[in-house]
Amino acid sequence: MSMHDEVLAAAKDMLRLNLTAGTSGNVSGRLEDGSVVITPSSIDYETMTLADLVVLDASGEVIEGTRSPSSEKLVHIACYKRFPEVQSVIHAHPVYASMFAVARQPIPSAIDEFAVYVGGDVPVADYAMTGSSELGENAADCLVDVGSALLANHGTVTVSDSPERAIHQLGVVERAAQIVWGARILGGDAELPSSTNETLGGYYRMMRKPS
Ligand SMILES: [Zn+2]
Image (cartoon, rainbow, N blue to C red; front, side):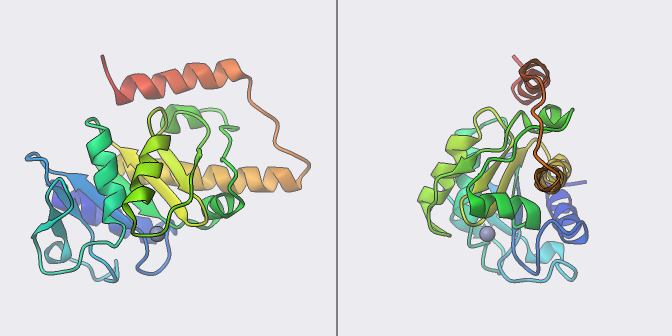
């Protein structure tokens, strides 16, 4: 599959798996020449085709495609600029993770194996307005050691080495948010031993940036 195919498939999966609503959210992938293929703004995922995708140069200017790029393109661009190992970025509005984003509370790494996929607690990036370059910089600040961050009062950003793995990771984050939310209603989320998260988070960082 080409990166265009992978981005389109991940965008359709994002809707199918209930990880975003309507036409919100966006998926991108880095191409070999450093440009970025990204989903367009305001097009239904169910009917979206390869021809709807837009290609941006490394600074976010449109170089291919007739649609408007996602209004959150600067979040994607900031992540690619900051992290050479990142090949795919997803911004989404999943319900449970967005609850933590609105409460401005990190999603704790409270489930065994969570840190293997995400690296550790999902932090909350400082608030910045939608569409601003500051929003992208604030998100990237949070993604040095972990693969997902919450955008305060907004949603999520996930970085990975492929669109397929980014969708999987986003699903892990959303499921964890739902479970922790429920556990708190049941009387509180117990912490994992810090040694578990250190070991498993170490695997994540080793896979993300092989030395
Ligand atoms: Zn958004």
